[in-house]
Image 1 (cartoon, helix red, strand yellow):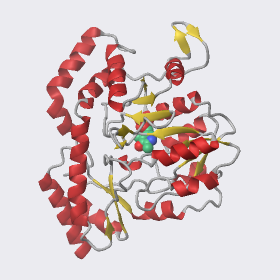
Image 2 (spheres, rainbow, N blue to C red):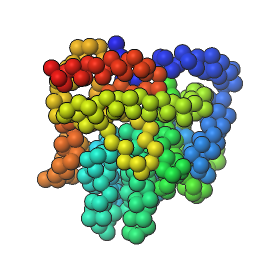
Image 3 (tube, helix red, strand yellow):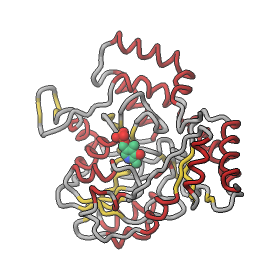
Image 4 (spheres, rainbow, N blue to C red):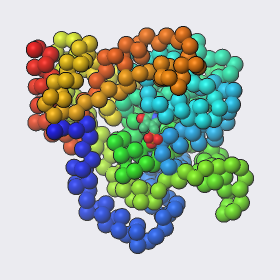
Length: 366
Ligand SMILES: *Cc1c(COP(=O)(O)O)cnc(C)c1O
């Protein structure tokens, strides 16, 4: 059996460090906003090259609180991509704003930046790009669009921890970068977790208040906030993994490049495209194939996991049909029919990759 991601193997490689860290954390008993959360926030700020980071309870909360802190509110419109996980658009709805979906680029699967300007109206308050599957969106273009139209930029970096453009990390371009530490993400904890990065001291201060019941000082509440703090025990695990994130991401790239070299030779299969704008960290390895069912079945028959990210673009999701009546976004619709994600994780061995490739190649030729 080859899974989509092997969290057990990664744990065994780090077992001593994580076990000892967790035991020390249990003895310490500073479970809420303790020393490891503070240390992790500092280490992340240093790694990302940003002035501030604020640990929160999940990637979804990172987006939600960042949108509040950015002043996005009821009646506003936020431009985003339909080819993402639901949380991106959910967070926009949490603040009472409307997601406005623009189609994606067929090569990178990222938001098509040529279509953003036409989607801007006087209600538009922000742009929310997603670095989908770990490939950075062209942030330089987004920032210039945003500046021209006086819009906020919130980056969804849930899939892009460690990805960068010209040495500048994702999450260091917009007003805020929103990260998820869901276990299967490039930097994953052993439960839920998230983080917002920003270069604005004011925004960071507001986020610290928002994540902690609107409290700026114990039992002093300036606004309605949330219970959304990064957990201390998760921070212990994340600190151990943060030290190794570049190595993890390089190994994801090793897997991806081995797949792509072989799959490029198979008729009807389009390996994922690196557009060269940034450094792709392959949260997912997602190819396009017209005879998807055949490949999926062959992989399953051979005990190899695969997944479809994403089978339904958000503008066609039941929850958004009322918002998106008659909206046609043909590229996302086609890609949703053809995309197939293969196992990609740092510990995946060359022999396993070769087996996966062999199964695909036989299914394609059979
Ligand atoms: C995982 C993910 C999120 C949400 O993160 P959680 O930590 O699961 O709440 C948001 N956006 C994208 C693109 C994601 O992949």
